Image (cartoon, rainbow, N blue to C red; front, side, top):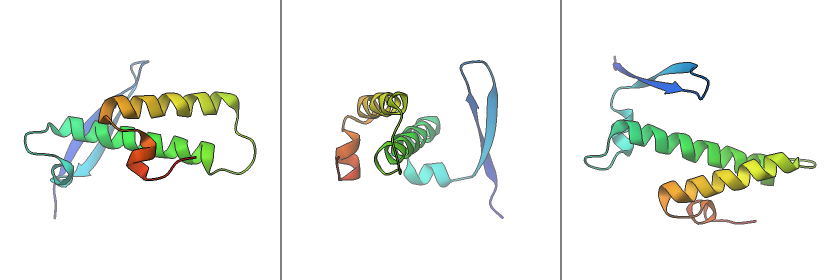
Length: 94
């Protein structure tokens, strides 16, 4: 049986969520010497960027303007963190 590692996410209002991941999983995605919390943060940013992209560009119907603005900001935050645009990272654009 594989042990787990606990990570805690804290929101802006002070609420928090604790998640369990299999021990060693985060290390699979880490570069040598990289903190595991940075890796978890990277995956979180990637996931939200991809999900926002899907909601705006691959959904059915009209997209609310505020969701488009949220997606645009998420793409900026993605590029700030990773040094490449989300379009480049995903290999397609709209």
